[in-house]
Length: 334
Image (cartoon, rainbow, N blue to C red; front, side):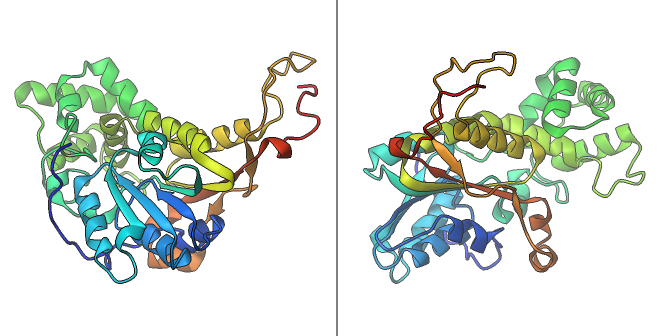
């Protein structure tokens, strides 16, 4: 495994979203075993450590080497030490990591799907267009290809499909056409140049609440990091390594993510997944989860005012069932 840089960045500038709701929803207790799939700035991990004191353990994953280094710095604080296990890994591999580290079964798993302020505020990471920087966008800077490769090599139609699928951008065709025209003159290598190309392609702001490049940047980031596939793998793995009664909490920031989380929990909570046209259940499906939050939890007005990133955040929580908890009518009609 590649070396992790030795850095120590203070956590005070990063505001974890839905902190109290997510952590309390996991029902943390002393001696419990928990996994934070995205350490980021460490706010959720820190809260889990405090809530599970004095001997609860938190396995903290992050694909970003700098975030893992921050987790290493947190280990040096009083009362933490070996209670925190930082690992450089994508949360798609959380089940395997939990087993390898002897942490399975887990009492709680938290997935915060947002991009941390540490990433957004670093121009060299290429996540934001308010600063000029290389068009990178990788969570893991030690592997994979930067977003500039997609921008400069994808055929126009594939680029338009990507921006539409992952950014839900109605102007995706115009944006793709403009990108292809511009890259013929010179490769598109910086965040500000791409943002300017998108701005011109869709005619500027024209009543938009956000910068017109926002959806395009989201789409490229999702594609560069294969975020949706990683989320699906993480959810499946989480159910496999949760202890009976253990809880899964997921914080999503856009509809693509939340749709995947919602459908996964609904499917794993259902007693039958047969198509509606089949009158009698033949699937043999057994529910493995119980919904804890019937509706998505959102930040209140005070948190949204203090932290604008919280406006788009939604939290869903589910609990792992035991076989004994399966409904008696699980084999009923669809």
